[in-house]
Length: 237
Image 1 (cartoon, one colour):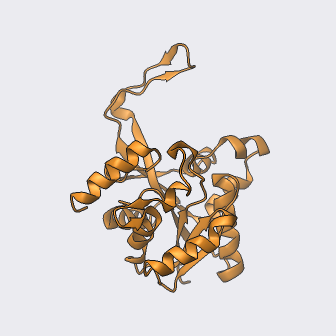
Image 2: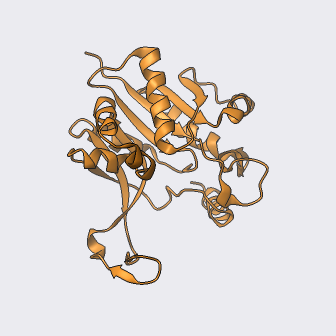
Image 3: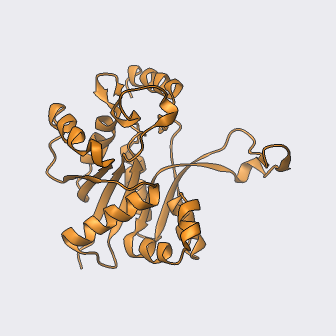
């Protein structure tokens, strides 16, 4: 049976934390190109992907097509589809698209990445795919250099051991059937609360592999992040 590996670029957010901008953050310029173009170009370099699915808000689908055409993002594997209202809805719609397009077998996998993490490396993507040979789910992480504090907003309730703490990044990668089955076990309330896909699989009892990320694999969420990202780009990343 042929194993299909899909890429899913999540560009469904409106980016309220970016402030008063005319475009969602994934379309803002980083250097000479929109952030989303930098990100998708990283995935085009990998010939293992059957399809590269890009999910955007419905009203931005046509704009995304125009942007890709303008900046020469012409890989025939790219499919631009409508995302959902929440992260899990967006992933669900991508999986439904795969089912309708190619069907889904027990060995098929998906590598899910935030559109606003434009500096993901080939190594991180390759390591995710490699880890899927042994695990049904993979999370990209970096060590937490600061002490992590759990609290209720007023008081500290716990200070976990820092050496055991990591910060999650993306990609997060999954055996598709495993994710679908894990998601189906959740209650409606859990589906709203649980925005982290790796946690959904973890709660179903599956082991989740850790792949080493990189501090440059940052998420561009605020104006400050965009300034940092431009600085990274100017250094030749």
